[in-house]
Structure formats: C-alpha cells, structure tokens
Image (tube, rainbow, N blue to C red; front, side, top):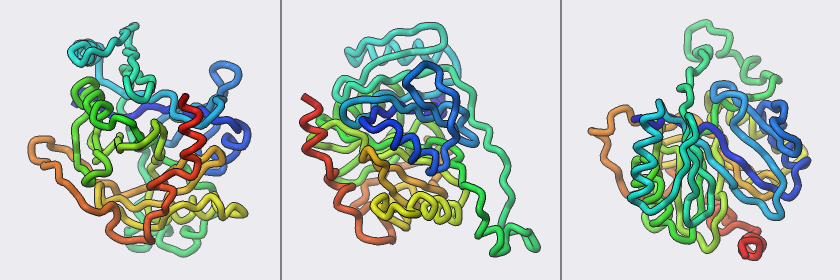
Length: 302
C-alpha cells in the first residue's frame, strides 16, 4: 500500500486557549508554533506535528494529512482525482486537494513510516510493569499516534468515493446504515465516514499502549471535569479495539484506543457488514448519534 498513515489534522475551534489546555491534559505533546495563532501537538510515535489547532467561529475539521511513500504515488492520486473530476495541486513532495462535500483540505505528502518505540512487555514473569505500582504510575499517558478520524458527511457516498476512488483508501468494514470504515495503513481503519445532516468531525482517535493506559489517561482528563465523559470503557465490534470517548471544550469527541485489528494482507481480508458498534460496554451515548451542538453546527455551515 503506497499510503501508510495519517500524518496530521487541523481543528478549528472558537475557544482556542481552553481547547489547547484540554489537549495538553489529554497527553498530547505541545510544540512550538510554525506561524502565529496556531498551536501544534505531537505524539510519541507519530511525530511532533499531529494536531494543529486554530481559531474558527464554530468547531470544524479543516484539514487532514496523509502519508505516502514517494512522489510517484502523488502522480497516481492526481490522475485518480482527475477521473473523479476533482482538482489537485502537486508541489514537490505534497499533493493538496479538497473533498467536494465537506470542504475538507486533504494533503498527501511523502512522509516517513512510523517506527514505534519499544515498550516494556507487562506480561513477562517478574517484570516490574506487572506490579500495581506501575499501574498506579503518575507520569502522564502519552498517545502513541493519531489513529483515525470519523467524518459526518451530508453526502457520505460521495465522500467515501473521494477517499477510495480518488485518494486510494480501502474499505475494511461497514456498520449497516451508519458508517464505512476505511484504511490507508495496516490499521483496520484510519477514516470513518457516516451520513449526517451536517458536515462535521464526529471524533478523532488516538492510540495508547494498552488498556491500563486508556484507564489512566481517561482518569486524568476527567479529574474535576465529569462533563468530559461521553462513552466507555468498552470494546468495539468493528476493528476490535478497546475504547473510551471524551469530549473537548469545543464539543469535539476524542477517543483513546488500543488493540485494533491489523490488516497486513489485502487479498485475504473480506469486508463485512455489522449491525452493532460495540461488543460490550455501556449503552452508546446519544451525543455520538446526534451531536449536542447540531443546531449550532448547521447554522455555522451557512
């Protein structure tokens, strides 16, 4: 697969400072801004610039970056987009285009593959990580990478075709009448598209090392802020990953996850259609089906 990961996303929010403080508590690593008025965050494995936050009147996902192997990949994507009747611009090692329904800026760039840093195996006999002291460690949990984003689209079929026929994502699975899960790496999904009355970011998702990391990270985010809780702890049917959903001060949902399925051989994977989202966990939060700020989002789209 010439595509191999998500490199970054840009969030527009009306309350920048409050949102920046949230993602610092969330465990992302603050970086020096490239230009005034923006805030960058990195992850352990994904690099120093995985989340960019800028100011906008209402919350929205402005841009997503995708990593490719080489410039030949950019040429192939440009030709595919042309057949899809979508314009693109190739400048050196970057291709920039716009998803026609959501208006999302999509940049495909030649980028290095993620080289995960080794972590101790907590299941080794006599390993200190097995002890309760390690589970109660007080150092912050640092997400390892940006895993995926879920887009709500007013024309989900067109948005899906843009990413599959145009950019080169592959369909992994579907939840019937709800969402299509797509990948640009060996992870089960890096992008999910669902039908919605408004174009918006349903959630971003950040990988952590293990289940204990999900628990510790969520506990830190919720400390003094119970309103940030959305849904979890549980395990999803599609992708098999463990999850916990929280909400940032702008209203964006963000997920900690670990243990996702990997698809290393496209030839043997058969996409399926699922009826439910979770294998176990609490009932799904209503705000994940219909966002609390739907009216504001719809007003801001005009």
